Image 1 (spheres, rainbow, N blue to C red):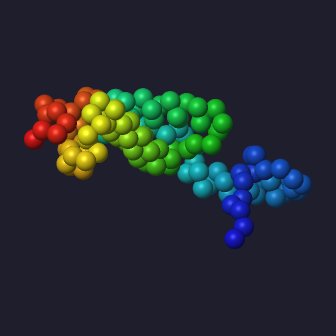
Image 2: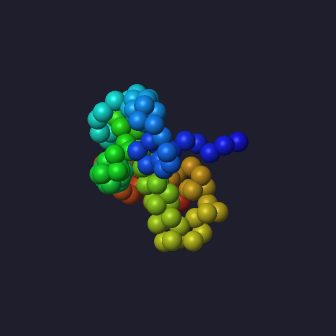
Image 3: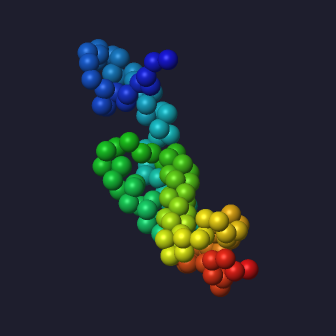
Length: 124
């Protein structure tokens, strides 16, 4: 199985002007047109901040488009949740063996806060 093709913007090697023009057009079509990804409203504050940070860095490289918003948002949710779980485990090393890790951490967080709502880890 061969390697995936690099974007024509970063590819090296000899290519005809016609091939470069065709590939640029195809790549622009696949990107979903111009535009910056916009953070969905359902991200919490930390997730939205990570989203904006990533977008600002990748937009300089001109490799993002509006179609990337959903994938990037899901990445930001996953990173935020992993960071939250790590923080809680570092505070209480017994958590990996508790039911909180498997049930409570995904339902205790709310959009406007970075900590569990009114419950504490391990409580109902």
